[in-house]
Image (cartoon, rainbow, N blue to C red; front, side, top):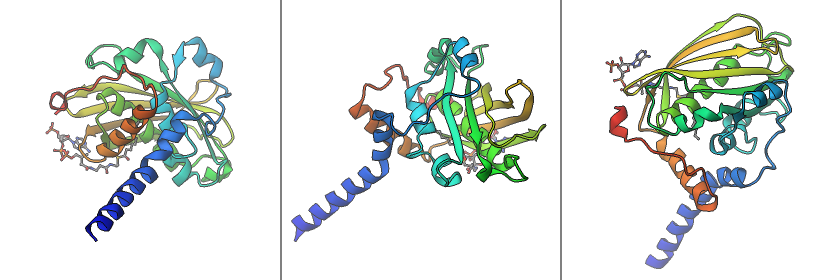
Length: 240
Ligand SMILES: CCCCCCCCCCCC(=O)SCCNC(=O)CCNC(=O)[C@H](O)C(C)(C)COP(=O)(O)OP(=O)(O)OC[C@H]1O[C@@H](n2cnc3c(N)ncnc32)[C@H](O)[C@@H]1OP(=O)(O)O
């Protein structure tokens, strides 16, 4: 009887772990789920010597798993979130604990929303833009704080020009400053002519909650891949 209960418990825990983390691992080791990155900003980003750290890229752009695809854009073709780009000279900085430097830590990502995500006709819903920016901030602050999860405490958005459906746009997010647990960020959405369409600022705070999920997913990925070994953890106490 005890043995059966133990076996049942093990099967339950195993099933739960598999169900929860396997999609990340699968997405990480396979490129099948990735959309192509043939977008309007590609040559500009290539010239700027930008790179795509795989760990964040998979989490971000995998249609298999990421909530942007699964929750918001329930139609498979509704949102194309292209890969995230970082300047390679700043990659070391992202993974280092030297956060007070003058150089801004930043990322770019490109998106293209289909008509499924319009509010007014052919105009991308402002709530979606807020979500995309919030998510860019979440990822950047997560990296900049040494992979400590963060939560949005404040998000301000100025919608300057309409963002059209079926067009490529680029979001640039950067760390403004970090003070203890507080990460202050800025973001801009540009069209292909580099016109500013949307501007945002945000305050993210490092938190304890939610972190285990990301940590476990990363640990699972590390088990099966040669994950970026430059990742350096920062002492949590230093941030609080
Ligand atoms: C690969 C994986 C990628 C991972 C990538 C993942 C990307 C996903 C990103 C998703 C982001 C989200 O949607 S997160 C979900 C939406 N956000 C939330 O649900 C957060 C709800 N709010 C809260 O739970 C709380 O308010 C917190 C955690 C934000 C803060 O609470 P706390 O921890 O108790 O901190 P608290 O003492 O209140 O505040 C600490 C300091 O911050 C200041 N502070 C707090 N809130 C504010 C505020 N809104 N505006 C100004 N200042 C503030 C306080 O004055 C204080 O300053 P001082 O006195 O110290 O100077």
